[in-house]
Length: 124
Image (cartoon, rainbow, N blue to C red; front, top):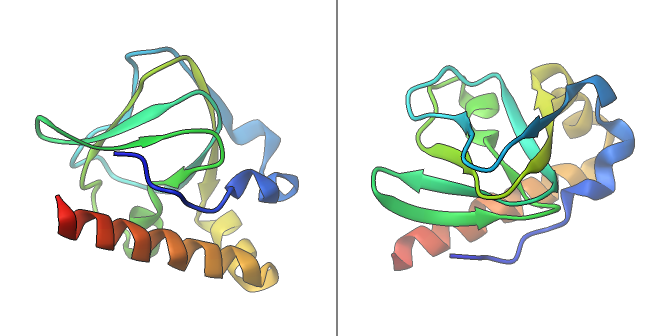
């Protein structure tokens, strides 16, 4: 399922350039149960969010995912796998807090994403 969300690449000036990672198609970014310390923004390519055998979302350039683990420090609740070769910007808790405190639009965009995904999950 593809849902329309804000383009988080607009915050790339605040991303740590050393925390941009490349994944090959088929690589897992993380798995259910992994300890999560970062959220991610898709800079290039596509990733798929899966729960068990169910595909939940396809994330493309500008989409953000993995934010729940940064917010609540709980284990990952889904698998995320690269569909194509991709580049992902990791936003750790320090960068996340900076963005929340210094860039008000980031918080609003994040809330929009959470609300949109919750609505989408209610229709699956």
